[in-house]
Image (cartoon, rainbow, N blue to C red; front, side, top):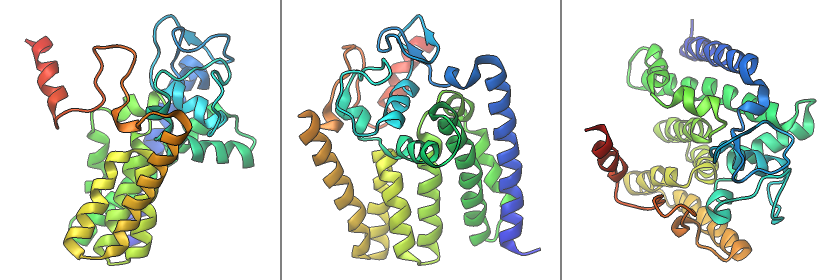
Length: 260
């Protein structure tokens, strides 16, 4: 069996596990429950609404319905921090496309995209492990990530961002830089912090092609600013206790206060 087929087999195991977890949650809360819409930001929406603030999946749901809408509400969902939310357009934009070309509804497309991204994430991780002469089974270690079930069950963007970023790393390692740039671009539009990987590739390989990732991210950030007149990375959430920008790992330090 070739290395690629071994990696595909490992990815299939991950895809099966993700599908099973998603199926269990669908049976419990239906696809609308993944949205985690809350009564604070969602009013008269077509999905189930929790009697609390809800979670980030509700904003990805709104973006997946109408990615570039500036309306106050889309299917009853209003942004809490418009620029901050819209800068992470990658995951909902893919779900929007899936819903447009398949019979899947938007709520179903969001779940399907994340499940597929689990398989892709593990496949690229397995290929990276093989690059370093290690077993592709190491790719499954990603499923030990504590937030894996959380991200899958609440329609969050981390899984898609990691899948793209690992794909970028894989193609950087085999020096297929154009493909690496494309994947890093997709990762940066899904979660802006992944652009640091493109910056690292630029420094290590001294290939200016990776500057395109930073340029694209800059253009998108400027576009979001032009739409909402807010700098995405500096936008504050309505809750004064929330902080979107801070020192690395500062959240861990803050949380430790409650642990003890």
